[in-house]
View (cartoon, rainbow, N blue to C red):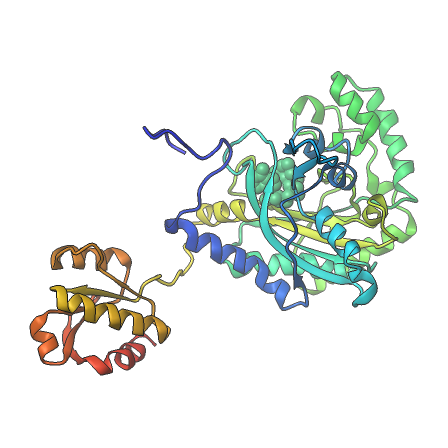
Length: 426
Ligand code: ATP
Ligand code: MG
């Protein structure tokens, strides 16, 4: 992201994942996904672009994501459909489920997970990018508080497995189609009486709950007396929410009730939650999700009450940094071969190939450089062993095996190298 003299740079709001950090990024994706695999979630991949209407309907016309942040693609004229890069994956996963009839042919709920880049035209800052990564889960087609609790517990397990401790779970219920409209109207009446700018007043008409989420002090200061959804929840929603809370408590997962928690998407009903990390400053949400019982019908499907979450990979990596956690990433190369002379080059090339085929990660000094460069390269590679050989070693039928940690060097017969190394690396 620093300025360089070259002509091209990564586009604004994007960054490259390079080998130095890739180990951590891949390990985070893996750690976020592992609890899902153990809980019966199947992997899905959907296209990175979809019909723009899937998002405007499936995410919500009044959301920032749709009104401000969408990457719409200008397609060739024969395309009647307008496309957009996906800003999130829930609508896509549900679309894929409906299209393949997974909800008819398989068990309900259909449990799915994904991992991939999402795109939002945001103002870039630390922890907020135009291309970012999420690992997400959706449980489609069941209304059961145990399912909501399961997902929250799995996300909590995922963060904890990385060693993260400095995060909190915020929990709320957004009600359902019975009780939310009543609350919505009460809130709207309250908001109409406030001193708000025109855009916020417009938002109050379209999606008043979103105003509660406004971060500006000028707005927040006026919300002290706003009616709260908890006071409007119907008996069904109240009982449902109480069960989710009890199941979390029984599982030893601590949470905070946050009656003002609403999320950026229109489709949420009942359970809503967010994972916030206290070491990240303004971009503190590392993940979030909730129940979206009406979404399937909004995109033309049958009634399929569902719940899901998306965890931000980029911010989880930042959270690890904030807590000073370094993951134990195995070195990519265990063995580095340093040939001395042309004949040794050919022999070691063969040995390295053999090691790799035997499952040992090995690399070789390329470019015809000398021994000194070879040892420097071996050190940089992070390898534990160097294999060195010159004409004389080969005449004796051996290579020199050097332990790069202790510095010890021993001759090893050519045909014993693979087994010797496999033993030592165990
Ligand atoms: P925020 O309030 O920070 O804008 P959001 O409500 O838009 O977050 P969601 O749509 O719920 O976020 O996405 C789930 C997670 O994805 C977030 O908790 C966050 O970790 C991550 N995320 C969302 N937008 C970005 C972004 N632009 N850059 C990096 N990570 C993001
Ligand atoms: Mg956002």
